[in-house]
Image 1: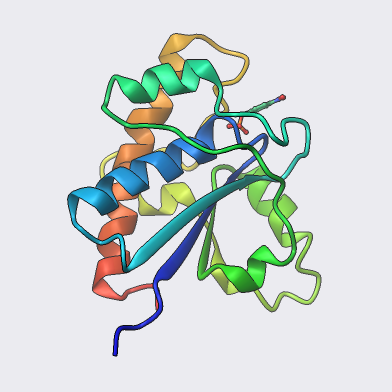
Image 2: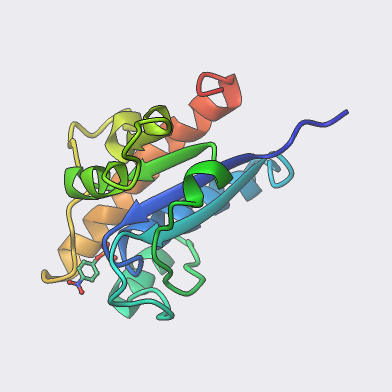
Length: 162
Ligand code: 4NP
């Protein structure tokens, strides 16, 4: 019998730039590897400012250059996500701290990791917030996330995160 799909949640601040990009890139890799039945992705923001908004158009343009399609509408991270997902990937240390603040007992701490922990080529420890910067920052987020998503996919496929 097939096992349940592995569920990934990508989290940033606004859920309009970094985490929808991580979701779009991961879905692109999942489709390329025909793993749609085995891995499911979603994204959320720790803040509520942009709830209901589509991905930022500057981010969408940077992703499109790599044939990555960004979809969805921003939503805020919710405590119920701790149970609903197998792994929660924070884009930076602030996102990480804000997620863990909602887990006062620490029972879900093992499910929350920094996205850059999965980088194989880049040495960055955080995915930088591109929102107040220029085009280069958005392009950089895509390149960094491609590296992290490739590393993450290989660990999920190996069962290293079960
Ligand atoms: P994200 O980027 O967290 O990658 O979606 C941001 C989006 C909005 C804001 C900051 C970062 N903001 O300040 O509104």
